[in-house]
View 1 (cartoon, rainbow, N blue to C red):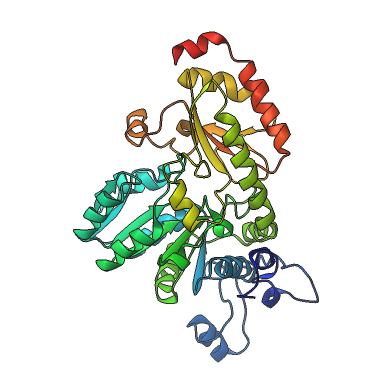
View 2: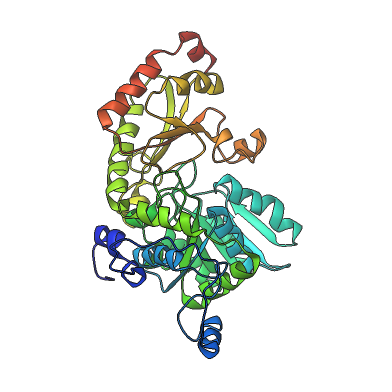
Amino acid sequence: MEQSKMGTKALWAGEKEQLVHGATQVPVIHSVSFGYDDLDEWYEVATGQKDGHIYGRNTNPTVKAFEEKIRILEGAEAVTSFSTGMAAISNTLETFLFPGDRIVSIKDTYGGTNKIFTEFLPQKQIDVELCETGNHEAIEAEVTKGCKILYLETPTNPTVKITDIERMVQAGHDVGALVIIDNTFATPINQNPIDLGVDLVIHSATKFLGGHADALGGVVCGPENLVEKIYHYREINGATLDPMAAYLLLRGMKTLHLRVEKQNENAHKIAEYLKTVDWVDDVFYPGLEEHIGHDIAKQQMRGFGGMLSFSVKGGMDTVRYLLPKLQFANRAANLGAVETVVGPARTTSHIECTPEERAAMGIPEGLIRYSAGIENIDDLINDLEQAFASLPEELMAKG
């Protein structure tokens, strides 16, 4: 299985060991506890000497199947899961960071992650240094001063900026730092950071992995010695992935490679179309040759992703008028679904931040995040065309 192609792994990986009674699909095991007549065997399972399950907060067969699938797709030694993507991020950071430690990251991380950096970690006397995304020299300079963790996100949410992973891994490892990356936007179909030297890879499984906007989840994978520590923190603190959510995520991942390939294609064509629209000031998509991170993305990614963003003339006034006109897009705080999803950063990725904080991160109030679905591309572009055609001319003057 490890040597199979991505599409095959997405379908078959992690499932066979959990099948029972001749079933061809992994069952949902809702049992909270798992019983043993042999007390010695119970003890061996409970202490990790033998495979098995004892309590749902720790492990579960359905959850294990989901974890194993993503472990194989990312090429990792070990994996553990969480109730949400933010639980995966926060639990991972809390596992390794203590008062007096230092973390270096970028300014353009997801809004919830940014809040951890700007609000919660400083409360614990952890020094946080946020650098301009894409300024590799500035990041290297801060890392050289010493840090416990170098935390990256590439492409970023929502401005899809790109960071050179191998270069940053070298800088982090030179000072003995753990290099952690949020790979949610790329997915393992487009990018495998572990192959580029990253220590730990995080996903909000809620997004592209599940792909159907019906289940929350998060996952972290990497070396066994590191993942064991994260798992121990999670099993005690309790941010456990629910088995029904694990089943939905597992089912969604069966079509991950097909969905992502179509979303890559749709996003690229939409980005090219938006470049021709008078109402649009800027289009942000790493697949565009003029994108500042295009060359790096081309080196480290197999596809440029299903996410793009664009800013419009007239700012929020235009956004308010434009988005409700779209027929084939959910206006919602989500991404990576089979249906197209749109929304401004101020109500999606960075709702936790103030307008001033968003501006400092280079996120204008008129920025629209566009998660391309798997719809027919002609329908999506025609939908955008009719929405732009409906805009009152006086709005453009405000830009």
